Image 1 (tube, rainbow, N blue to C red):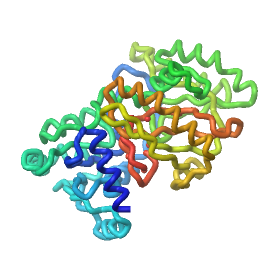
Image 2: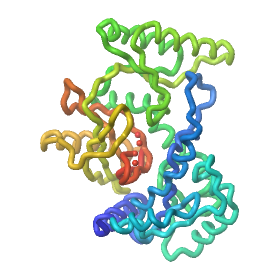
Image 3: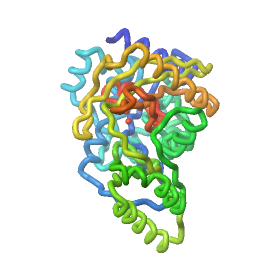
Image 4: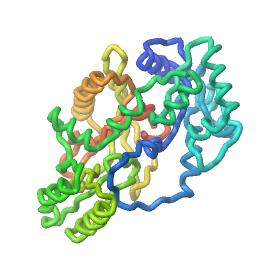
Length: 374
């Protein structure tokens, strides 16, 4: 396992920086999308489970399964030694850890570091005296990560917050799929309330046939911002809530996609590595195991046959070429899925572009290492 990780780490460093002899400083800032806020956009009210944040904010420890031996992981507090011992027994956990001196459980890793002057000073020293150039590798980039890079002097090895925000938009994904002729779920992108109303008129026949629709926040991830619509009454209830906000705020802009609900057999997660010269390497595919909407792990290898694997390996390259045009060099994780009717149809759910860990699906753990742009 150590040999495999060393080889992969070297490939990733070359893809991101054009150099092999560099130190990657991993910042596993899960749920960075919370900071991709869109001003002037109407949203449906959502439930917030505050207690879950404390757990999510400590998931940065999973970086031990990604970082190479000469790399660094940024943590909210020193790691549990039993956890590190178990990771090392599997060939991981040999990188250096730098922990913040003060940890507020309610803050994510980046916010914690920005509120810790001594840790900022330590990272600034690292940028000045490191034997090899250091680069900051966050799960995803927001204004906070750009601020951390500026204050520490450690440059980002991944795209800017503007690019991350753009490619994590489900509407952007749908438009790109359409442009490239890639089959996707029947649906519409909606940026105004009028577009949402007309989109529903186009799709409501699905309800009459006994099917369902789903309204998705274009910037939502991990099941957030999703409303399943089983009848017209449910849709118009959502519209009424948005119309009330529009009247109160004087705006009618939204950012949703309305799609047909598709019954599926499973999710498939596969990774593509793009290097700075435009080379595209298909790394592999995993089958997600999900029980009642909760991720349980992966099946490796997946149940795909050689023909299906070939289809998955070919299609993403068309999307990768567009990413190269946007100056995006990252490890990508795409998330197609099987449907009951189309056993292996390539239907891209989203193009989120973040870093995923080899532990969970999505750098997704939205892990295999994935530097997203889904």
